[in-house]
Amino acid sequence: MSINKTTVTSKDIASVSKDEVGNHARKGVKWTVIQVVARNILSLGTTAVLSRILSPSDFGLVGMVATLTALLMAFSDMGLSWATIQRKNISRIQVSNLFWLNVGIGAILWSICWLSSPWVANFYGEQALVAITTALGTGFILSGLAAQPIALLNRKMEYKTIAKIEVFSITIGALSALTAAISGLGYWALVIQSLGTGIVRFILAIPMSRIQITFPRQGFGTLGLLTFGGMLAVSDFLLYAARNLDSVLIGKYWGTAELGFYNRAYFLMWLPSLLATGILTNLVVPSLSVLQDDINRFGNAYRKSLCMVAFIACPMALGLTLTANEMVYLIYGEQWQPVIPMLVWLSIASITEPIYKTTSWLFTAAGKAKTYLLMTFLSGVVLSIVFYLSIPYGALGMSKSYGITMGLAIVFPALWLAHKSAGLSFLKSIKVLWPIVICLTGMTFTVVGIEKLTSSWQLSIYSTLAIKVFFGMVSYIAIANLLMKEMIVNEFYSIIRRR
Image 1 (cartoon, rainbow, N blue to C red):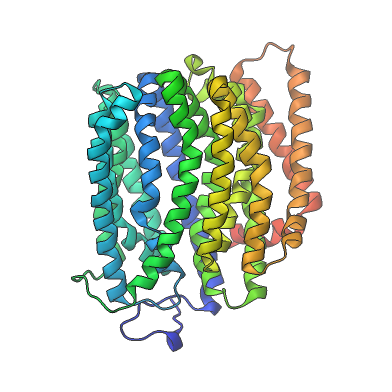
Image 2 (image 1 turned 45 degrees about the vertical axis):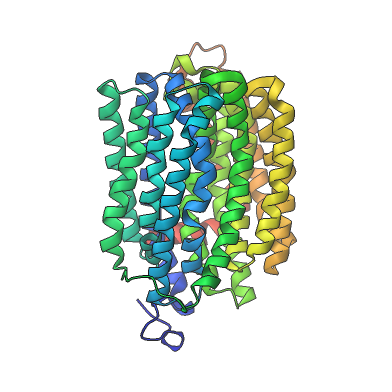
């Protein structure tokens, strides 16, 4: 690894130089793809099996607690991982101090879960939530232990090591959940899956990151890192709070079964964004952080990443909309049919979510935590108002509100503000996205046409799904080769050739 020695002291943690950042990012694509694809395949496969063993109410119970833990999760890291990645120079003592801060914050959040568990149970009218909330709260301590070791590996762009840690820990968590479900433990299988993954992750991450942990020490500039990370944490908290308010309201007013259906639709809605942005976030943010004082290279790197994430994730999200009936039947089974219309509406947000996600890349890499906080606050206010107005219409009404508001009303103002904060041209980024819009339009007409053509053929649901997916992919790739051939050759084919 090539190190920029002009900015590193003997006590600093080495980082990748500007000249080598592109090379490390390209090498990291392979391992990041393996990590993200394996994670989502394991997650989807485990969910498909568990959905046939557990009931919607089991998922609904854990979903009620997941709403609380998702809110608190924003503070479990306090943005300190991004502080470690974003800073040009950071010492081993600072990272050690941040490690202890993460662990301490995790312990505090677990205490909050433990103390609030009776209130959560009374709020929903489900006494089983006392034990579930206390148990899932332990995950905050586990994530605190792993936060800085994983951040160090990201700073050094050691993506192969990160992939090994993540895939192995998720595999153990999935096997633990399946074993528990088959043994008849019900909703505890979902709890065991979460905790099992967290335990294995921190056990592997600490030695493999080579982090040097010492007793906490004062006077080493830790406060500045905490301030930057804290603003990111508050921003994430506001975003989580707004986005999980829908689940809280559904669970409160419509019950566990309705929430179980909604959560399964929400899970599928998130998959495309998780796949694409999960692959690129840990590649792009460290790279952009290195280039933050070179606006031209910064802008070019961001636009390439924006184009790639939209090119990969947007057609997958649109595909979920066009094959909602078949996908729900295939993954969850016939008893989950109410998920279908919810997934269709949520998929509106799913299509633009990967684009929205890139705003956090700009705010974080450019060090604009205050502006990011403002954006998430305003977005949260809008979402909260819409969700409260949707209560009388149940989970389906909430799905419509979320899809339209998050998918259409919020994404582009947020993208404009992120560009302005980072000093980039908003119009140049929009220009990059136009060919993808045309490709998606062509894909839609193709799949809808094929569906009408085959509607009288008496095909099985699996055959229908296969035909839709095949012709959707062919039409999308064909149009993309006409409109975006240069990008495809330079960014995708070149990576494949290197591999």
